[in-house]
Image (cartoon, rainbow, N blue to C red; front, side):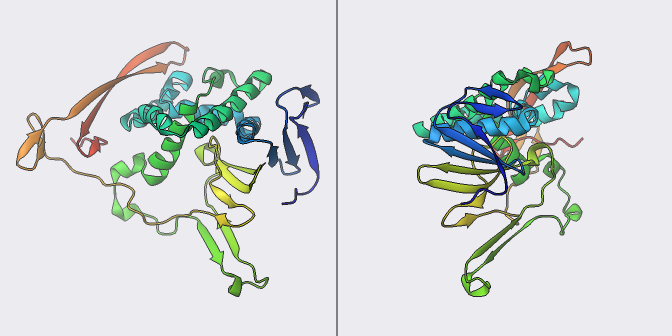
Length: 311
């Protein structure tokens, strides 16, 4: 795969050139930045590849990535103030932090190490260039592997598959024209005689939707594509043999259940079941910087958390 245009070289083998400064970082790993700011990462092993991938994302989108991880922890109101309280409530309602810890324990040992390497790249970049980290995002450091899995849940499962808007379900408000598109063209239908894959995502250019374009090369791996900021894996892209993509579809991503309340819970068959109750204490930063505490009471039925209570 060729590197496009002119390339400015950031050497992680011995030194790394950045804003006129040289910094010793990692050996046997190299990042080549093309004129579009896209990193092309060449590493001798997968741990160094993931390290450099986290490092490169932090270089391009450090403060955004830290804020997203803070939101995925359900602590954004503690870091950034009351406007983020609704975000924290949604995260804890869906038990994202606890599930992230459970998911990490289920990973293969090599993938646990890849996550550790990715977060090490993030944290090392922040340590080497502290002036690039905003004062309000600095408190989120260091990043841990559980933050990656919490961020994945918050973005993919609890925004794309379902999200807070869906708790106010209204079939008449669905916009048929929304969504992106992907095209696959077979060899017999293309002028070149080669298969073609056209990936055309339609996402905003900010927040959790920000794409990060990259090439990853290591051992027998050679991938070019993009991922959402904060993710250690390529979401859409191609290698030397095939390409992959995703786009909008009409999958059944969630089900809403309307419960009939009883004196001691909700109706279940011919009986009544009590709600499962759990309490989360959230910290909220005031305009004066002082932290206060807010108690969030979460009710759950056999179907999942109670996302709406109509009066």
